[in-house]
Length: 452
Image (cartoon, rainbow, N blue to C red):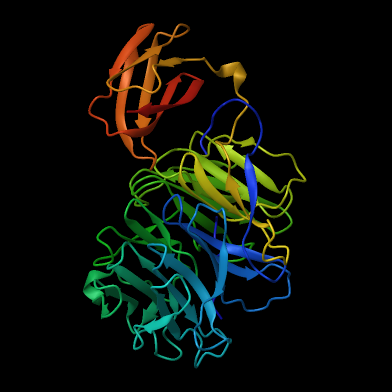
């Protein structure tokens, strides 16, 4: 039976140590529905995949969806036509359209892994089978997940079947699927397989980890795949062997948390990459206390949550080198999280059995804060709103690095400012909100500016 990699799933306003989460009800009639995966489409549309958080081990085929930013959530069933199938993941592209994958996972080597892909176009009311000839070789096929970049282009990926990884691709929303030829996929090592897991995606790139400590990657929406060795031997083995979890901020920058040692005395090391996982640094001791990690897209800010002691939320604003606990021990359990941008995100909780209640998921109500007053200079940025020019006053420092990002986390401007007062031309930026990230040595501040 295949081992399962669990989903690992802010911006710093530098004011107060307080994780600003607001509880929302996920609409489940059963208590202890956890969320293994939170997938944000836009500021209004979020899908989440349910699991049995009671500890009873029930096989759950349910999801929940909001189309109004979490004001209300509607739960539903992913109808697979077989209640024994175990759901891998969910991949939405809009408020109406999503795909999900599932496997027969009964521990029987003659059927284990045979997969099924389904699609909804009506917000989860109905689900239609797709790619019905894919992943059907008993004892060999194993469907690990499905991922769509948009309403047309997607992939379904699994373990080697024959001599090559079994990967199927569609360019018409799943009406037709074509198996990616072996010549377009890096060859598997002897005994190599992937993991039944949420795909790792960022910046248009998709990765999946293997039991040989490698990351398979596609940068052309599944047409071709390369493989690179990470600094560990297996992404999912049990201690005392090592294992690891990986996240990416964009197509190049990523973070790997490696676990080694023993169950009684685990050791944690982190690595970073700037080339999409082709190479990694030498590694350094991980100093955080929570280990369900996710990036704010396009930034070096990593959020860490935990459902085991110490539960709560932490943040790193320096790509995982140092961590600040935003909630004291004993806070509510925080599970997998996801962020659209610096100010919009959700974090998994557990339902309370009241479909009209307010438990099950947490929404970020304002930017998470880090108390860093001893090292922060109060940069002045004005006017706000602005139409053409912004003035930045830096009375306590002479040189300031400025990085401007939009609401998606995309960097739209980088400048090195010298002098006490500087003017920055923003006339070419589109109307909207932007984050001015200012830093000088250990002095940092983030200012939100509205461009009109």
